[in-house]
Image (cartoon, rainbow, N blue to C red; front, side, top):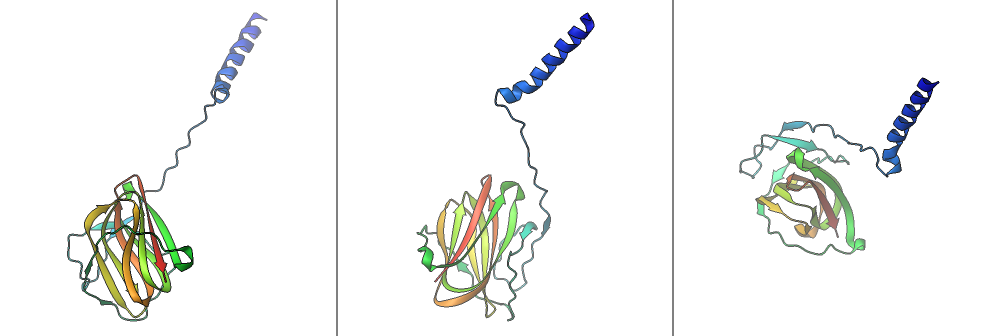
Amino acid sequence: MKKLLITLVTLSVVLVGLGAGEALGQRRRVVIRRPHPLRRPLIVRPNHPFRRNLPKEVVVRTARKPVVVNAPLVYLPELTWTPVVVPLPPTERLIWQESETIAQDEEWVDKSFGVDQSGNALFLDIGGQARLLFADVTFANGNVQVVNFNDRTYGSGIYRLLDFADGRHVSTVRILARSESNDTKLGVYLSK
């Protein structure tokens, strides 16, 4: 009988001990592990005007909306970007938008955005710190405007990426970027 009593007391102490964490508001910590990103060689066409040292491998993020450009690609002279923080146009002027979050451990990310809309200005929204190399803006007629970011780190804000006052049909936007903070959100907007 004494052994049974000791066993019951021991069992109740163990059960109370197991439930004490929940009683004190402690919860089990769940750790979510992302799969290690797949790195691929960076592909830049031979006639691409960007001539700096480029990373050999990148994480490739394809466009959510695939867009086919039926014209041969013609690279326009490279534009050097002047970063100026601007307000985002009113909602009724925004035609298209998409964003992507880049983790710091991914290193360089080659992100494509499938736009396939007509407008007159592109905006880049950075949430966090992003080191940027270049952007390729491909138009429906096959012209590609390369925007040189000068391999610099830019902080949070909304920036004018490219103006084309004549109104152009933007097929895709490709950005080569690296997060310099824990996570960086890159958003691209097209306005009319």
